[in-house]
Image (tube, rainbow, N blue to C red; front, side):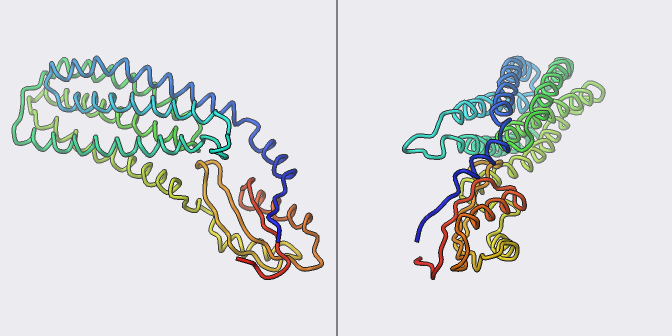
Length: 307
């Protein structure tokens, strides 16, 4: 039995399929870095404004921005780390750093949501004085900054989990700024301060939904879960049906290096008269065309599987 892989075909497909990957990664890195500077810069103003005005909505938004600055810095560092070449101890390189950053970002957002909920409930039972005017102007400034940061991330690579995780943080900030503007308007016109913790709760729940999705998806990748559309049974049935000379496919394993880079390994038992090289070409071609996978490791077998 030999453990075989068609290096020539895979190299050619990688080159054509990923020719723009360095440019995309560099663009994503720049977008996150600029968003990080904008978010971190305005965070200071929101912290001061929240403390002066007494607004939980502003403090919550400042908390979002503080967490987001760290999260964006982590995401930026993950992009830098992923550029490092593979070595003898990390044969796939450092690409998983992006997924790990997204997972940490999601956990951080969930923790922040819990803090906001607890603080909001306490504010409902013990209201505090809120200065609506100061709160309004700072919230408007925060909204403008968050809109710019969100545009930078939203127009980046939508398939990159690291970018999406960073965007979730910025969406939380954006919603927090909108809530703060509404809150300030209600307080200025009516003086009803419970609107502040109530809208903070609404924003927290909206952010939790997105944060949970990012956390669950990144955890699935870290746990070597099968990518969407790459179920082993479906791959086996498709290859046996469409490739002549292929008698059986088994020991199929699918996982992802990152959300954009699925990987597959499988055993293929071929007919004794079949050409192994031609079968390898056929399997790689079918996986690329039907399943959009360009990294497939195939063990060719002409007898019963030794495993």
